Length: 154
Image (tube, rainbow, N blue to C red; front, side, top):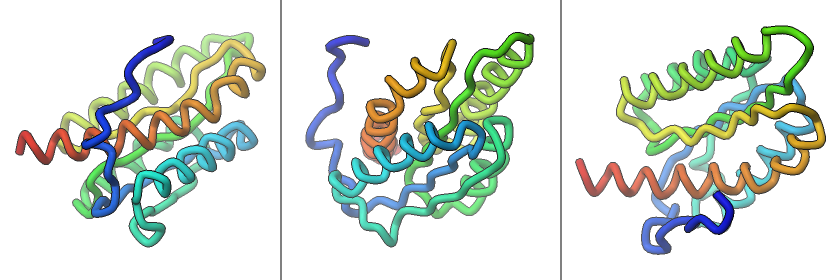
């Protein structure tokens, strides 16, 4: 999405929003960088620190379970999924990538809560590192914007 519009400014005011973040620990140096970029962007968009809930889970497949628990609480205007899946030598990559993505999408639809999916799926560590900061920031912006979009619709 080179050159893609990064959001409508009037929809990027996070001052009154509560955001939940679920971070997978697997490939933690990458997911920590994703979180740091996401967190910093949320703060820059006006989301108050006290309104950001951060939970860590073992890996990408566990992200959906924590997101579901957060969605069921109905305390959040938007949720964010952070993780990193790097292709290995077996079919496991496809299973984890497909199932984690499908789980996040299903939860968003089932609970009608926006979930910004920043679970990276890359061929190698270099690709993950190259994307970690931009995708973390993008996830924050998507969460805030979609919270406002659903508010306008609802």
